[in-house]
Length: 259
Ligand SMILES: [Zn+2]
Image (cartoon, rainbow, N blue to C red; front, side, top):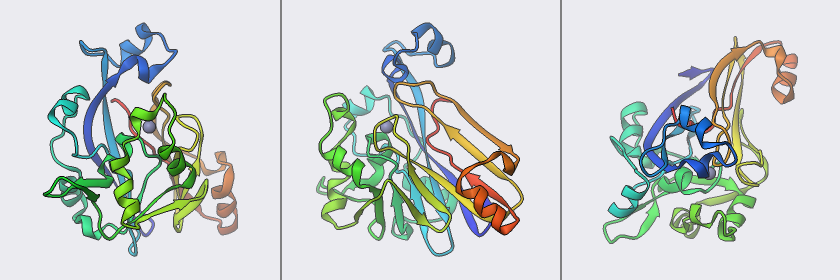
């Protein structure tokens, strides 16, 4: 998809399964089971999707999926099912190799978002998957990942970020920051205290779309992509629009949950 000067593509990663009760929290099972039927282990099926943004200068990958460092036992436990690796999908969809990615952005460091940050080399050691990339994550999230609570400890697997830190490729960022011109990360506590969402605001577009996904582990999943008139928006994009007299494209699509 071409958006102004940027090329943006969804990069599917894999399917996996987690306990439906843990995902929907206080929502009664008889409600969520109607839209996300659980399997015989009470797990629901979820899809992971990353986003690729080529600015012409930078090749940005937002999220890296669940990765390939799982044992057969773990793959079975999480019901991980993939048709191809993330690298193969990147190659197929946008024609880039791991060496071509210049920026990796993690919204947070749960294993289903940061698992592809690293990969195992032939000796079984986790190394950065994208050797030439700068990896961005909020400093608050990095700190929390190193000091998780008992409740979320299982979601943080150090092999997903420590090799990147050791390679000097991770950069701790502010609560809100700009990745490349027009692409911003914003902290929206909820799923955890330091999770970020991304927003793409580009000038000289006729319309915008807002894809949203507010899932998450413990809340109701809702995914929709829709177009609206620009003047329904508040925030920075509207201000820029007023200045330029143009319409914008806004995309703030997060993690696509079960379909
Ligand atoms: Zn998460």
